[in-house]
Image (tube, rainbow, N blue to C red; front, side, top):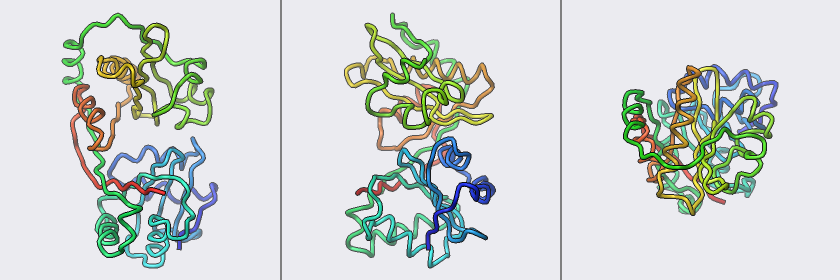
Length: 269
């Protein structure tokens, strides 16, 4: 069965997570208690199978994929059979295991599953510094202000992808995260920020206000954050749904190259 681990037991999950060869920064943030997520396993004493949930709604499944008792509980959870899941999740699983085949089998054999599980595609990218530098030279010059996010700008973020969903509060974000806003006539038009950050990497979160889309603002503000990464010896990291055409194309314009695709399951309520 799925057992919710206490935070003092999160250290038991660190090594298994390190063996997952995809972008796992959101799960790392939970294990490091940057944010108050949830961690489930098959055992408190000797866990072998793991399910990590970030409060923004991203979840990661990894570990022993032949644990039938855990898998039965997992099926109940992701299909929301007992109505215990009250929010949407986006689930990805370690591609080194059989998880995708297991979930796809569930979709094909359980008549109610397709109503609660929708299959998408997640893309991981690798960063090409030379391509980024060339793209910067060709970017149009726009008369807009790009400023670092301060407390006021953090609190002024609107709906959508916002740093407040990835950090406990503005103080933690300003100390451990960081980012930039592009201002148009004094209002926030586009924001690029550290969604996750560790000693060597910074994963980029991006949001452009609907009224300001299509003007090239996202590329400019992201470029400012990538420059910050390079100045601080941080690898910029980008991941998105393949179906998110805007993010997918923007990543490539900024020098990110698709490196891995894997199933990405939307668990609806």
